[in-house]
Length: 191
Image (cartoon, rainbow, N blue to C red):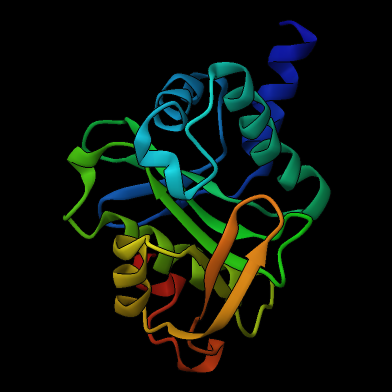
């Protein structure tokens, strides 16, 4: 095996794997990039830094892997158990410029919306952040106008507690997640 392949396999083994009834939250893989790049190249990504070309998408994809390296945690790729397809990302996220640690989520295609998949992924990721990382609270930073993510935040028990203007992304709502001891079912619900 090549050094690159050995490293990729080691990276995959180091990142936790969380299974829910319909999803697997796992490490990002090079094979996920085309779906990620298609998402970031589309208007769907307008609330998450896009649309951008494949070169910029590659940098953003590297940011996801690098976050795991530098912080010891990051967003997971959401894999649909029924199809094995990578459909989005969700997880703990705290890059430079964020006001505090976040639970983030994206679904890359409209065909996966409206099924509760983003909520299932975000709940599992939040449970992991609380139970494994020891977080006691988290936010979700949602760009103004992203009504679908605001509705999801409300379904997750989040409350808008203020605003934040990010230097790159602009005005956002700061949504507070329920405290770790009040969130309800955590990771154990998916064991």
